[in-house]
Image (cartoon, rainbow, N blue to C red; front, side, top):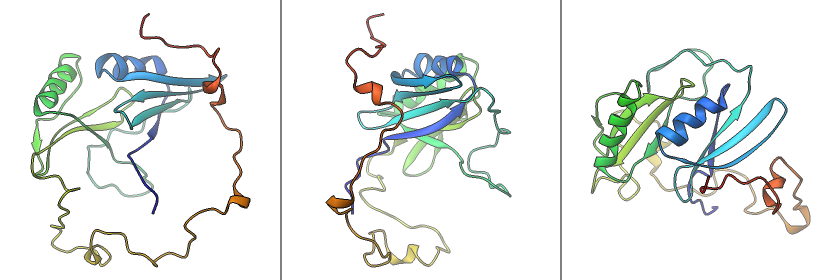
Length: 199
């Protein structure tokens, strides 16, 4: 199995990048670490942690979906419920709640989910977001637990990945490896426009 180290980036959509930057960078305090674009298209990246980014495509004709409460089931086509961003301390959770409320955003009460404490809100694009603090000694990564009273059959097989369930090779053979140019190659150029912290 590959060695994962976190979510490189979660890509969401906005029709107003300026409003999105004001919320994610200026209100929540995430650094804007990269941006690329051309006529009718932008993709900007915000730093959540040393390994995790959240990104936004700006599509001017995109329209927000109807606001939906976090975790409430829906019928019909659907692909995304909410994103939860971890915070370092319980105090950070309370601070975020106050910051969002002070800026006029709806924020839930602090909810105790056993392994995390969370608050819920929405960004200016209507994207449901959650902020979560890990309850000490309850990290599911250290001690996986299945408390579903009627778990699906595959969950009963345990938490560890099972080998042999998929027919696949472990690695692409060297002779089949090719890398094709994609958006963002200009990030490697030394003369790219930089958004320095000194401004």
